[in-house]
Image (tube, rainbow over all chains, first blue to last red; front, side):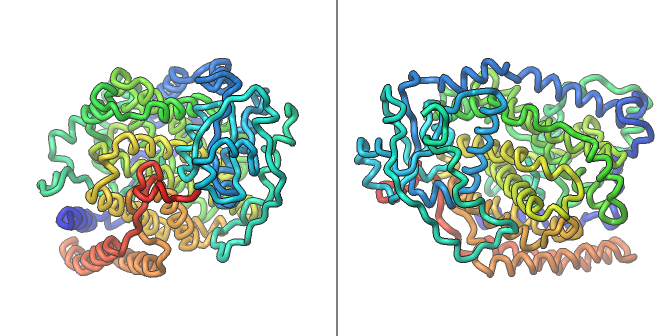
Length: 217
Length: 406
Protein backbone atom coordinates (compact mmCIF):
# COMPACT_ATOMS: atom_id res chain seq x y z
CA UNK A 1 0.00 0.00 0.00
CA UNK A 2 2.77 2.38 0.89
CA UNK A 3 4.37 1.39 -2.36
CA UNK A 4 1.31 2.42 -4.28
CA UNK A 5 1.22 5.76 -2.54
CA UNK A 6 4.78 6.41 -3.49
CA UNK A 7 3.85 5.40 -6.99
CA UNK A 8 1.23 8.09 -7.04
CA UNK A 9 3.58 10.57 -5.48
CA UNK A 10 6.13 9.65 -8.10
CA UNK A 11 3.55 10.35 -10.74
CA UNK A 12 2.86 13.63 -9.06
CA UNK A 13 6.51 14.48 -9.35
CA UNK A 14 6.69 13.58 -12.99
CA UNK A 15 3.64 15.72 -13.65
CA UNK A 16 5.19 18.65 -11.92
CA UNK A 17 8.21 18.43 -14.15
CA UNK A 18 5.96 19.18 -17.08
CA UNK A 19 4.25 22.02 -15.35
CA UNK A 20 3.65 24.69 -17.97
CA UNK A 21 6.31 27.29 -17.59
CA UNK A 22 4.33 30.17 -18.95
CA UNK A 23 0.73 31.14 -18.67
CA UNK A 24 -1.07 28.46 -20.60
CA UNK A 25 -2.98 29.64 -23.59
CA UNK A 26 -6.64 28.93 -23.41
CA UNK A 27 -7.80 28.05 -26.87
CA UNK A 28 -11.09 26.79 -25.54
CA UNK A 29 -11.92 30.14 -24.04
CA UNK A 30 -12.69 32.35 -26.97
CA UNK A 31 -13.77 35.95 -26.95
CA UNK A 32 -17.21 36.56 -28.32
CA UNK A 33 -17.29 39.19 -30.99
CA UNK A 34 -20.99 38.89 -31.49
CA UNK A 35 -23.80 37.98 -29.16
CA UNK A 36 -23.61 34.29 -28.32
CA UNK A 37 -26.79 33.14 -29.96
CA UNK A 38 -26.36 35.05 -33.19
CA UNK A 39 -23.07 33.86 -34.60
CA UNK A 40 -23.64 30.36 -35.94
CA UNK A 41 -20.38 30.42 -37.90
CA UNK A 42 -18.01 30.85 -35.02
CA UNK A 43 -16.75 27.60 -33.58
CA UNK A 44 -17.39 28.73 -30.07
CA UNK A 45 -21.00 29.56 -30.29
CA UNK A 46 -21.98 26.82 -32.68
CA UNK A 47 -20.65 23.96 -30.61
CA UNK A 48 -21.73 25.68 -27.48
CA UNK A 49 -25.23 25.88 -28.87
CA UNK A 50 -25.15 22.24 -29.85
CA UNK A 51 -24.03 21.16 -26.46
CA UNK A 52 -26.69 23.24 -24.83
CA UNK A 53 -29.30 21.65 -27.04
CA UNK A 54 -28.25 18.21 -25.91
CA UNK A 55 -28.25 19.38 -22.33
CA UNK A 56 -31.81 20.54 -22.78
CA UNK A 57 -32.80 17.22 -24.29
CA UNK A 58 -31.28 15.42 -21.36
CA UNK A 59 -33.24 17.57 -18.99
CA UNK A 60 -36.46 17.05 -20.87
CA UNK A 61 -35.92 13.32 -20.96
CA UNK A 62 -35.62 12.95 -17.22
CA UNK A 63 -37.90 15.68 -16.02
CA UNK A 64 -41.02 14.43 -14.37
CA UNK A 65 -44.26 16.30 -14.52
CA UNK A 66 -45.16 18.38 -11.52
CA UNK A 67 -48.18 16.22 -10.90
CA UNK A 68 -46.15 13.02 -10.74
CA UNK A 69 -43.69 14.65 -8.38
CA UNK A 70 -46.50 15.85 -6.15
CA UNK A 71 -47.96 12.39 -6.04
CA UNK A 72 -44.61 10.94 -5.11
CA UNK A 73 -43.99 13.60 -2.52
CA UNK A 74 -47.31 13.42 -0.80
CA UNK A 75 -48.32 9.80 -1.01
CA UNK A 76 -44.94 8.89 0.37
CA UNK A 77 -44.80 5.66 -1.60
CA UNK A 78 -45.53 2.92 0.89
CA UNK A 79 -48.24 2.99 3.55
CA UNK A 80 -51.29 5.17 3.78
CA UNK A 81 -51.57 8.59 5.37
CA UNK A 82 -51.85 6.84 8.73
CA UNK A 83 -48.22 5.82 8.70
CA UNK A 84 -45.84 8.20 10.42
CA UNK A 85 -42.16 7.75 9.77
CA UNK A 86 -39.52 9.39 11.86
CA UNK A 87 -35.84 9.83 12.62
CA UNK A 88 -34.88 10.89 16.10
CA UNK A 89 -31.76 12.05 17.97
CA UNK A 90 -30.87 14.41 20.75
CA UNK A 91 -31.92 18.03 20.39
CA UNK A 92 -28.37 19.35 20.23
CA UNK A 93 -27.59 17.20 17.22
CA UNK A 94 -30.83 17.92 15.41
CA UNK A 95 -31.25 21.63 16.07
CA UNK A 96 -27.81 22.99 16.87
CA UNK A 97 -25.01 21.01 15.26
CA UNK A 98 -26.31 19.94 11.87
CA UNK A 99 -26.75 23.20 10.04
CA UNK A 100 -27.35 21.54 6.67
CA UNK A 101 -30.47 20.04 8.28
CA UNK A 102 -31.92 23.53 8.68
CA UNK A 103 -31.18 24.18 5.00
CA UNK A 104 -32.94 20.99 3.86
CA UNK A 105 -35.98 21.82 5.97
CA UNK A 106 -36.22 25.37 4.66
CA UNK A 107 -35.71 24.21 1.10
CA UNK A 108 -38.56 21.75 1.47
CA UNK A 109 -40.87 24.30 3.06
CA UNK A 110 -40.12 26.70 0.22
CA UNK A 111 -40.93 24.03 -2.36
CA UNK A 112 -44.20 23.07 -0.67
CA UNK A 113 -45.15 26.75 -0.71
CA UNK A 114 -44.23 27.15 -4.39
CA UNK A 115 -46.22 24.09 -5.40
CA UNK A 116 -49.15 24.65 -3.02
CA UNK A 117 -48.62 21.39 -1.23
CA UNK A 118 -49.86 20.61 2.23
CA UNK A 119 -47.09 20.26 4.76
CA UNK A 120 -46.51 16.65 5.73
CA UNK A 121 -43.31 16.95 7.79
CA UNK A 122 -42.78 18.30 11.28
CA UNK A 123 -40.21 18.65 13.99
CA UNK A 124 -41.43 17.30 17.30
CA UNK A 125 -39.55 18.21 20.45
CA UNK A 126 -39.68 15.48 23.12
CA UNK A 127 -42.29 13.47 21.22
CA UNK A 128 -44.80 11.50 23.28
CA UNK A 129 -44.84 8.64 20.79
CA UNK A 130 -41.33 7.72 21.94
CA UNK A 131 -42.94 5.99 24.96
CA UNK A 132 -43.89 3.22 22.55
CA UNK A 133 -40.24 2.70 21.56
CA UNK A 134 -38.23 1.57 24.59
CA UNK A 135 -35.46 0.25 22.35
CA UNK A 136 -35.00 3.74 20.99
CA UNK A 137 -35.37 5.68 24.23
CA UNK A 138 -32.74 3.66 26.06
CA UNK A 139 -30.19 4.82 23.47
CA UNK A 140 -31.31 8.42 23.28
CA UNK A 141 -29.92 11.50 24.97
CA UNK A 142 -32.63 13.87 26.14
CA UNK A 143 -34.18 16.19 25.30
CA UNK A 144 -34.83 14.48 21.97
CA UNK A 145 -36.15 15.87 18.71
CA UNK A 146 -37.87 13.82 16.03
CA UNK A 147 -38.41 14.62 12.39
CA UNK A 148 -41.80 13.11 11.56
CA UNK A 149 -43.37 12.72 8.14
CA UNK A 150 -46.03 10.73 6.36
CA UNK A 151 -43.56 10.42 3.48
CA UNK A 152 -41.61 7.25 4.25
CA UNK A 153 -39.01 7.45 1.49
CA UNK A 154 -38.16 11.00 2.49
CA UNK A 155 -37.46 9.86 6.04
CA UNK A 156 -35.23 7.11 4.59
CA UNK A 157 -33.38 9.83 2.71
CA UNK A 158 -33.05 11.92 5.86
CA UNK A 159 -31.64 8.90 7.70
CA UNK A 160 -29.05 8.56 4.95
CA UNK A 161 -28.18 12.25 5.24
CA UNK A 162 -28.12 12.59 9.02
CA UNK A 163 -26.74 9.08 9.72
CA UNK A 164 -26.44 9.59 13.49
CA UNK A 165 -30.18 9.18 14.01
CA UNK A 166 -32.55 6.29 14.79
CA UNK A 167 -35.34 5.51 12.36
CA UNK A 168 -38.73 3.85 12.85
CA UNK A 169 -42.42 4.31 12.09
CA UNK A 170 -45.85 3.91 13.70
CA UNK A 171 -49.50 3.91 12.72
CA UNK A 172 -52.25 6.14 14.03
CA UNK A 173 -55.39 7.82 12.68
CA UNK A 174 -54.91 10.81 14.89
CA UNK A 175 -52.50 13.47 13.62
CA UNK A 176 -52.60 15.37 16.87
CA UNK A 177 -51.63 12.25 18.78
CA UNK A 178 -48.84 11.50 16.33
CA UNK A 179 -47.29 14.89 16.82
CA UNK A 180 -47.91 15.36 20.54
CA UNK A 181 -44.91 16.63 22.46
CA UNK A 182 -43.96 17.34 26.06
CA UNK A 183 -43.27 21.01 26.57
CA UNK A 184 -39.65 21.70 27.38
CA UNK A 185 -37.27 24.60 27.15
CA UNK A 186 -34.35 24.00 24.87
CA UNK A 187 -31.06 25.71 25.42
CA UNK A 188 -27.75 25.24 23.72
CA UNK A 189 -24.40 26.36 24.99
CA UNK A 190 -22.51 28.61 22.64
CA UNK A 191 -19.78 26.70 20.81
CA UNK A 192 -16.39 27.13 22.46
CA UNK A 193 -14.71 28.24 19.29
CA UNK A 194 -16.54 29.26 16.19
CA UNK A 195 -14.16 29.62 13.25
CA UNK A 196 -16.65 29.77 10.38
CA UNK A 197 -16.65 33.07 8.45
CA UNK A 198 -20.37 33.45 9.21
CA UNK A 199 -22.66 33.33 12.24
CA UNK A 200 -24.60 30.26 13.30
CA UNK A 201 -28.21 29.95 12.24
CA UNK A 202 -30.34 31.69 14.80
CA UNK A 203 -31.78 29.93 17.79
CA UNK A 204 -35.38 29.04 17.05
CA UNK A 205 -34.99 28.38 13.31
CA UNK A 206 -37.06 25.26 13.86
CA UNK A 207 -40.20 27.06 14.97
CA UNK A 208 -41.90 27.08 11.54
CA UNK A 209 -41.65 23.29 11.58
CA UNK A 210 -43.27 22.68 14.96
CA UNK A 211 -46.76 21.15 14.69
CA UNK A 212 -48.41 24.00 16.63
CA UNK A 213 -47.28 26.44 13.96
CA UNK A 214 -48.77 24.58 11.05
CA UNK A 215 -52.33 25.29 10.07
CA UNK A 216 -53.58 21.73 9.84
CA UNK A 217 -52.99 20.66 13.45
CA UNK B 1 -19.48 18.42 -8.92
CA UNK B 2 -16.54 20.49 -7.99
CA UNK B 3 -13.33 18.96 -9.21
CA UNK B 4 -10.83 19.27 -6.41
CA UNK B 5 -9.26 16.06 -7.44
CA UNK B 6 -6.49 17.12 -9.71
CA UNK B 7 -3.68 15.88 -7.51
CA UNK B 8 -4.87 12.33 -7.82
CA UNK B 9 -3.24 10.63 -10.72
CA UNK B 10 -4.64 7.60 -12.44
CA UNK B 11 -3.43 4.31 -11.08
CA UNK B 12 -4.84 0.92 -11.81
CA UNK B 13 -4.19 -1.47 -8.96
CA UNK B 14 -1.72 -2.30 -6.27
CA UNK B 15 1.66 -3.44 -7.52
CA UNK B 16 0.88 -2.93 -11.16
CA UNK B 17 2.95 -0.77 -13.42
CA UNK B 18 2.13 2.88 -13.80
CA UNK B 19 -0.28 3.46 -16.67
CA UNK B 20 1.11 5.92 -19.17
CA UNK B 21 -1.34 8.65 -19.87
CA UNK B 22 -2.07 8.99 -23.55
CA UNK B 23 -0.35 5.82 -24.65
CA UNK B 24 -2.75 3.32 -23.14
CA UNK B 25 -5.19 1.91 -25.63
CA UNK B 26 -7.73 1.28 -22.93
CA UNK B 27 -7.73 4.86 -21.83
CA UNK B 28 -8.25 5.99 -25.34
CA UNK B 29 -11.27 3.77 -25.92
CA UNK B 30 -12.83 4.98 -22.73
CA UNK B 31 -12.10 8.51 -23.65
CA UNK B 32 -14.01 8.05 -26.86
CA UNK B 33 -16.85 6.30 -25.13
CA UNK B 34 -17.81 9.35 -23.11
CA UNK B 35 -19.32 11.59 -25.67
CA UNK B 36 -22.15 14.00 -25.71
CA UNK B 37 -24.75 13.31 -28.33
CA UNK B 38 -24.15 16.74 -29.78
CA UNK B 39 -20.60 15.91 -30.72
CA UNK B 40 -21.59 12.92 -32.81
CA UNK B 41 -21.98 15.03 -35.91
CA UNK B 42 -18.60 15.65 -37.48
CA UNK B 43 -17.78 19.33 -37.67
CA UNK B 44 -17.21 20.94 -41.07
CA UNK B 45 -13.65 20.41 -42.35
CA UNK B 46 -12.46 23.95 -41.79
CA UNK B 47 -13.57 23.92 -38.19
CA UNK B 48 -12.00 20.51 -37.73
CA UNK B 49 -8.57 21.57 -38.88
CA UNK B 50 -8.76 24.67 -36.79
CA UNK B 51 -9.71 22.62 -33.77
CA UNK B 52 -6.88 20.23 -34.41
CA UNK B 53 -4.34 22.97 -33.99
CA UNK B 54 -6.09 24.21 -30.91
CA UNK B 55 -6.12 20.77 -29.43
CA UNK B 56 -2.35 20.71 -29.33
CA UNK B 57 -2.35 23.97 -27.48
CA UNK B 58 -4.45 22.81 -24.52
CA UNK B 59 -2.16 22.79 -21.57
CA UNK B 60 -3.33 21.15 -18.43
CA UNK B 61 -1.44 21.91 -15.31
CA UNK B 62 -1.40 19.64 -12.30
CA UNK B 63 -4.19 21.49 -10.60
CA UNK B 64 -6.69 22.09 -13.40
CA UNK B 65 -10.13 20.50 -13.02
CA UNK B 66 -10.20 17.10 -14.66
CA UNK B 67 -12.61 15.03 -16.69
CA UNK B 68 -13.18 11.50 -15.47
CA UNK B 69 -14.06 8.21 -17.00
CA UNK B 70 -14.42 4.77 -15.49
CA UNK B 71 -14.84 1.07 -16.12
CA UNK B 72 -18.47 1.01 -17.16
CA UNK B 73 -18.63 -2.79 -17.35
CA UNK B 74 -17.56 -3.07 -13.73
CA UNK B 75 -20.12 -0.42 -12.81
CA UNK B 76 -22.82 -2.53 -14.48
CA UNK B 77 -21.73 -5.55 -12.46
CA UNK B 78 -21.72 -3.61 -9.21
CA UNK B 79 -25.29 -2.42 -9.62
CA UNK B 80 -26.76 -5.57 -11.01
CA UNK B 81 -29.42 -6.49 -8.45
CA UNK B 82 -29.15 -10.16 -9.38
CA UNK B 83 -25.44 -10.33 -8.67
CA UNK B 84 -25.44 -7.97 -5.72
CA UNK B 85 -28.36 -8.94 -3.52
CA UNK B 86 -27.34 -6.56 -0.73
CA UNK B 87 -28.25 -3.42 -2.63
CA UNK B 88 -30.42 -1.32 -0.36
CA UNK B 89 -32.93 -0.37 -2.99
CA UNK B 90 -35.11 1.47 -0.45
CA UNK B 91 -32.31 4.00 -0.05
CA UNK B 92 -31.94 4.42 -3.81
CA UNK B 93 -35.69 4.78 -4.29
CA UNK B 94 -35.74 7.43 -1.57
CA UNK B 95 -32.95 9.25 -3.34
CA UNK B 96 -34.71 8.97 -6.67
CA UNK B 97 -37.77 10.63 -5.15
CA UNK B 98 -35.59 13.48 -3.88
CA UNK B 99 -33.98 14.00 -7.26
CA UNK B 100 -37.30 13.81 -9.10
CA UNK B 101 -38.67 16.50 -6.83
CA UNK B 102 -36.25 18.85 -8.57
CA UNK B 103 -36.00 21.52 -5.92
CA UNK B 104 -34.14 23.90 -8.20
CA UNK B 105 -36.25 23.58 -11.33
CA UNK B 106 -36.93 27.32 -11.45
CA UNK B 107 -33.94 28.56 -9.47
CA UNK B 108 -31.39 29.31 -12.15
CA UNK B 109 -32.95 32.37 -13.75
CA UNK B 110 -30.69 35.29 -14.55
CA UNK B 111 -31.46 38.96 -14.35
CA UNK B 112 -29.86 42.14 -15.59
CA UNK B 113 -27.79 42.53 -12.43
CA UNK B 114 -25.30 40.06 -13.88
CA UNK B 115 -24.17 42.08 -16.85
CA UNK B 116 -24.07 45.30 -14.84
CA UNK B 117 -21.95 43.69 -12.12
CA UNK B 118 -19.61 42.17 -14.70
CA UNK B 119 -19.08 45.54 -16.35
CA UNK B 120 -18.14 47.04 -13.01
CA UNK B 121 -15.54 44.36 -12.36
CA UNK B 122 -12.31 45.73 -13.76
CA UNK B 123 -8.60 45.24 -13.34
CA UNK B 124 -7.04 42.09 -11.91
CA UNK B 125 -10.24 41.03 -10.15
CA UNK B 126 -12.00 40.76 -13.50
CA UNK B 127 -9.47 38.26 -14.79
CA UNK B 128 -9.73 36.27 -11.58
CA UNK B 129 -13.49 36.17 -11.83
CA UNK B 130 -13.31 34.88 -15.36
CA UNK B 131 -10.96 32.16 -14.24
CA UNK B 132 -13.26 31.25 -11.38
CA UNK B 133 -16.25 30.94 -13.71
CA UNK B 134 -14.24 28.98 -16.23
CA UNK B 135 -12.90 26.47 -13.72
CA UNK B 136 -16.25 26.06 -12.02
CA UNK B 137 -17.99 25.55 -15.35
CA UNK B 138 -15.43 22.94 -16.40
CA UNK B 139 -15.86 21.10 -13.11
CA UNK B 140 -19.66 21.05 -13.32
CA UNK B 141 -19.48 20.02 -16.94
CA UNK B 142 -17.11 17.22 -16.06
CA UNK B 143 -19.77 15.91 -13.65
CA UNK B 144 -22.39 16.18 -16.36
CA UNK B 145 -20.39 14.03 -18.78
CA UNK B 146 -19.61 11.30 -16.29
CA UNK B 147 -23.12 11.09 -14.80
CA UNK B 148 -24.80 11.21 -18.18
CA UNK B 149 -22.77 8.28 -19.41
CA UNK B 150 -23.38 6.30 -16.23
CA UNK B 151 -27.10 7.00 -16.51
CA UNK B 152 -27.02 5.64 -20.03
CA UNK B 153 -24.91 2.59 -19.26
CA UNK B 154 -26.77 1.42 -16.16
CA UNK B 155 -30.28 1.76 -17.63
CA UNK B 156 -30.72 -1.98 -18.15
CA UNK B 157 -29.01 -3.38 -15.07
CA UNK B 158 -30.39 -0.95 -12.53
CA UNK B 159 -32.97 1.53 -13.82
CA UNK B 160 -33.30 3.28 -10.45
CA UNK B 161 -29.59 3.99 -10.06
CA UNK B 162 -29.44 4.90 -13.76
CA UNK B 163 -32.24 7.43 -13.42
CA UNK B 164 -30.56 9.05 -10.45
CA UNK B 165 -27.38 9.47 -12.50
CA UNK B 166 -29.43 11.05 -15.29
CA UNK B 167 -31.11 13.43 -12.86
CA UNK B 168 -27.76 14.38 -11.40
CA UNK B 169 -26.45 15.08 -14.88
CA UNK B 170 -29.48 17.36 -15.30
CA UNK B 171 -28.32 19.32 -12.24
CA UNK B 172 -24.73 19.50 -13.43
CA UNK B 173 -25.80 20.63 -16.89
CA UNK B 174 -27.89 23.35 -15.35
CA UNK B 175 -25.00 24.50 -13.16
CA UNK B 176 -22.52 24.44 -16.03
CA UNK B 177 -24.93 26.30 -18.28
CA UNK B 178 -25.52 28.94 -15.64
CA UNK B 179 -21.79 29.46 -15.16
CA UNK B 180 -21.25 29.63 -18.88
CA UNK B 181 -23.93 32.30 -19.16
CA UNK B 182 -21.97 34.09 -16.45
CA UNK B 183 -18.96 33.99 -18.74
CA UNK B 184 -21.03 35.63 -21.45
CA UNK B 185 -21.33 38.65 -19.13
CA UNK B 186 -17.58 38.93 -19.64
CA UNK B 187 -18.01 38.42 -23.41
CA UNK B 188 -16.60 34.91 -23.26
CA UNK B 189 -17.93 31.39 -23.52
CA UNK B 190 -16.49 27.99 -22.82
CA UNK B 191 -16.72 25.77 -25.84
CA UNK B 192 -18.08 22.75 -24.01
CA UNK B 193 -18.45 20.60 -27.10
CA UNK B 194 -14.81 21.18 -27.91
CA UNK B 195 -13.75 20.52 -24.34
CA UNK B 196 -15.62 17.23 -24.42
CA UNK B 197 -13.45 16.06 -27.27
CA UNK B 198 -10.17 17.74 -26.58
CA UNK B 199 -9.65 17.35 -22.86
CA UNK B 200 -7.79 14.43 -21.43
CA UNK B 201 -9.92 12.03 -19.40
CA UNK B 202 -8.59 10.63 -16.16
CA UNK B 203 -9.49 6.99 -15.71
CA UNK B 204 -10.62 5.84 -12.28
CA UNK B 205 -11.86 2.43 -11.27
CA UNK B 206 -15.43 2.60 -9.91
CA UNK B 207 -14.36 2.50 -6.28
CA UNK B 208 -12.10 5.48 -6.82
CA UNK B 209 -14.87 7.29 -8.67
CA UNK B 210 -17.01 6.79 -5.55
CA UNK B 211 -14.43 8.17 -3.13
CA UNK B 212 -13.45 11.01 -5.45
CA UNK B 213 -16.89 12.19 -6.49
CA UNK B 214 -18.26 11.85 -2.96
CA UNK B 215 -15.54 14.18 -1.74
CA UNK B 216 -15.91 16.52 -4.70
CA UNK B 217 -19.62 16.94 -4.12
CA UNK B 218 -19.37 17.39 -0.37
CA UNK B 219 -16.45 19.81 -0.55
CA UNK B 220 -18.36 21.67 -3.25
CA UNK B 221 -21.29 22.00 -0.89
CA UNK B 222 -19.10 23.37 1.90
CA UNK B 223 -17.34 25.84 -0.37
CA UNK B 224 -20.55 27.23 -1.79
CA UNK B 225 -22.50 27.43 1.44
CA UNK B 226 -19.58 29.11 3.17
CA UNK B 227 -19.26 31.74 0.45
CA UNK B 228 -23.03 32.24 0.44
CA UNK B 229 -23.37 32.70 4.19
CA UNK B 230 -20.34 34.94 4.40
CA UNK B 231 -21.63 37.21 1.62
CA UNK B 232 -25.10 37.31 3.09
CA UNK B 233 -23.61 38.81 6.23
CA UNK B 234 -21.18 41.02 4.33
CA UNK B 235 -23.13 42.24 1.30
CA UNK B 236 -20.54 44.92 0.55
CA UNK B 237 -18.40 42.15 -0.98
CA UNK B 238 -21.25 40.84 -3.13
CA UNK B 239 -19.59 41.95 -6.35
CA UNK B 240 -21.25 39.51 -8.73
CA UNK B 241 -24.79 38.13 -8.30
CA UNK B 242 -23.96 34.47 -8.98
CA UNK B 243 -23.14 33.99 -5.30
CA UNK B 244 -26.75 34.74 -4.37
CA UNK B 245 -27.71 31.49 -6.08
CA UNK B 246 -25.27 29.37 -4.08
CA UNK B 247 -27.56 28.54 -1.17
CA UNK B 248 -30.02 26.53 -3.26
CA UNK B 249 -27.37 25.45 -5.74
CA UNK B 250 -25.18 23.74 -3.18
CA UNK B 251 -28.09 21.70 -1.86
CA UNK B 252 -27.84 19.87 -5.19
CA UNK B 253 -24.16 19.18 -4.53
CA UNK B 254 -24.92 17.91 -1.06
CA UNK B 255 -27.62 15.53 -2.37
CA UNK B 256 -25.26 14.25 -5.05
CA UNK B 257 -22.83 13.44 -2.28
CA UNK B 258 -25.57 11.55 -0.42
CA UNK B 259 -26.10 9.41 -3.47
CA UNK B 260 -22.43 8.41 -3.54
CA UNK B 261 -22.71 7.70 0.14
CA UNK B 262 -25.54 5.25 -0.65
CA UNK B 263 -23.52 3.75 -3.51
CA UNK B 264 -20.63 3.07 -1.15
CA UNK B 265 -22.93 1.61 1.49
CA UNK B 266 -24.23 -0.72 -1.19
CA UNK B 267 -20.66 -1.90 -1.77
CA UNK B 268 -19.38 -2.49 1.78
CA UNK B 269 -16.21 -4.05 0.37
CA UNK B 270 -15.14 -0.47 -0.46
CA UNK B 271 -15.57 0.63 3.14
CA UNK B 272 -14.78 -2.16 5.52
CA UNK B 273 -11.16 -3.23 5.30
CA UNK B 274 -7.70 -1.81 5.87
CA UNK B 275 -7.26 -1.04 2.18
CA UNK B 276 -10.44 1.03 2.20
CA UNK B 277 -9.09 2.99 5.16
CA UNK B 278 -5.83 3.72 3.40
CA UNK B 279 -7.59 4.79 0.21
CA UNK B 280 -10.03 6.95 2.14
CA UNK B 281 -7.17 8.85 3.74
CA UNK B 282 -5.38 9.10 0.42
CA UNK B 283 -8.39 10.62 -1.32
CA UNK B 284 -9.09 13.02 1.53
CA UNK B 285 -5.51 14.22 1.44
CA UNK B 286 -5.48 14.61 -2.35
CA UNK B 287 -8.69 16.61 -2.38
CA UNK B 288 -7.76 18.87 0.53
CA UNK B 289 -4.23 19.57 -0.69
CA UNK B 290 -5.41 20.26 -4.23
CA UNK B 291 -7.93 22.78 -3.00
CA UNK B 292 -5.48 24.44 -0.62
CA UNK B 293 -2.74 24.83 -3.22
CA UNK B 294 -5.21 25.99 -5.86
CA UNK B 295 -6.88 28.54 -3.65
CA UNK B 296 -3.62 29.91 -2.24
CA UNK B 297 -2.54 30.60 -5.82
CA UNK B 298 -5.73 32.59 -6.25
CA UNK B 299 -6.01 34.35 -2.92
CA UNK B 300 -6.90 37.57 -4.73
CA UNK B 301 -10.25 36.02 -5.59
CA UNK B 302 -11.10 35.13 -2.00
CA UNK B 303 -9.81 38.44 -0.70
CA UNK B 304 -11.87 40.13 -3.41
CA UNK B 305 -15.00 38.72 -1.84
CA UNK B 306 -13.80 39.53 1.67
CA UNK B 307 -12.57 36.10 2.76
CA UNK B 308 -9.23 35.12 4.21
CA UNK B 309 -8.19 32.33 1.81
CA UNK B 310 -6.47 30.08 4.31
CA UNK B 311 -9.14 30.46 6.96
CA UNK B 312 -11.83 29.81 4.39
CA UNK B 313 -10.06 26.69 3.16
CA UNK B 314 -9.43 25.33 6.63
CA UNK B 315 -13.09 25.82 7.52
CA UNK B 316 -14.13 23.97 4.35
CA UNK B 317 -11.61 21.18 4.98
CA UNK B 318 -12.66 20.67 8.59
CA UNK B 319 -16.37 20.61 7.77
CA UNK B 320 -15.91 18.35 4.74
CA UNK B 321 -13.84 16.01 6.86
CA UNK B 322 -16.54 15.88 9.53
CA UNK B 323 -19.14 15.12 6.88
CA UNK B 324 -16.92 12.49 5.27
CA UNK B 325 -16.43 10.78 8.62
CA UNK B 326 -20.10 9.74 8.35
CA UNK B 327 -19.20 7.32 5.59
CA UNK B 328 -15.44 6.82 5.03
CA UNK B 329 -13.92 4.23 7.39
CA UNK B 330 -11.02 6.57 8.21
CA UNK B 331 -10.37 10.27 7.77
CA UNK B 332 -7.45 12.61 8.42
CA UNK B 333 -6.95 14.46 11.68
CA UNK B 334 -7.35 17.83 9.98
CA UNK B 335 -8.14 19.62 13.23
CA UNK B 336 -4.67 18.83 14.51
CA UNK B 337 -2.73 22.13 14.04
CA UNK B 338 0.14 20.13 12.56
CA UNK B 339 -2.02 19.35 9.54
CA UNK B 340 -2.40 23.04 8.69
CA UNK B 341 1.32 23.63 9.25
CA UNK B 342 2.03 20.92 6.68
CA UNK B 343 -0.39 22.47 4.20
CA UNK B 344 1.26 25.84 4.65
CA UNK B 345 4.68 24.37 3.97
CA UNK B 346 3.30 22.76 0.80
CA UNK B 347 2.05 26.17 -0.32
CA UNK B 348 5.56 27.62 0.15
CA UNK B 349 7.14 24.82 -1.85
CA UNK B 350 4.51 25.09 -4.56
CA UNK B 351 5.14 28.84 -4.83
CA UNK B 352 8.83 28.14 -5.35
CA UNK B 353 7.98 25.52 -7.96
CA UNK B 354 5.84 27.98 -9.85
CA UNK B 355 8.60 30.58 -9.62
CA UNK B 356 11.03 28.18 -11.30
CA UNK B 357 8.68 27.99 -14.25
CA UNK B 358 8.66 31.77 -14.61
CA UNK B 359 12.44 32.11 -14.92
CA UNK B 360 14.32 32.33 -18.23
CA UNK B 361 16.31 29.15 -17.60
CA UNK B 362 16.46 26.36 -20.15
CA UNK B 363 13.97 23.52 -19.64
CA UNK B 364 16.77 21.26 -18.39
CA UNK B 365 17.92 23.72 -15.75
CA UNK B 366 14.30 24.28 -14.70
CA UNK B 367 13.75 20.58 -14.23
CA UNK B 368 16.94 20.24 -12.22
CA UNK B 369 15.86 23.09 -10.01
CA UNK B 370 12.50 21.46 -9.52
CA UNK B 371 13.81 18.11 -8.31
CA UNK B 372 14.59 19.11 -4.70
CA UNK B 373 11.33 21.04 -4.46
CA UNK B 374 9.32 18.08 -5.68
CA UNK B 375 11.10 15.86 -3.20
CA UNK B 376 10.22 18.31 -0.43
CA UNK B 377 6.59 18.43 -1.52
CA UNK B 378 6.38 14.65 -1.70
CA UNK B 379 7.90 14.46 1.74
CA UNK B 380 5.26 16.79 3.20
CA UNK B 381 2.48 14.89 1.47
CA UNK B 382 3.71 11.58 2.78
CA UNK B 383 4.09 12.95 6.29
CA UNK B 384 0.55 14.35 6.20
CA UNK B 385 -0.73 11.03 4.91
CA UNK B 386 0.96 9.15 7.71
CA UNK B 387 -0.39 11.35 10.50
CA UNK B 388 -2.48 9.36 12.95
CA UNK B 389 -5.91 9.01 11.31
CA UNK B 390 -9.38 9.10 12.84
CA UNK B 391 -11.47 5.95 12.65
CA UNK B 392 -14.90 6.76 11.28
CA UNK B 393 -17.84 5.47 9.27
CA UNK B 394 -21.60 5.26 9.01
CA UNK B 395 -23.39 4.08 12.14
CA UNK B 396 -25.03 1.51 9.86
CA UNK B 397 -21.69 -0.31 9.86
CA UNK B 398 -19.98 0.79 13.03
CA UNK B 399 -18.81 -1.93 15.39
CA UNK B 400 -19.53 0.33 18.35
CA UNK B 401 -23.10 0.80 17.18
CA UNK B 402 -24.96 -1.13 19.95
CA UNK B 403 -23.42 1.10 22.62
CA UNK B 404 -23.86 4.33 20.70
CA UNK B 405 -26.11 6.93 22.25
CA UNK B 406 -27.93 9.20 19.83
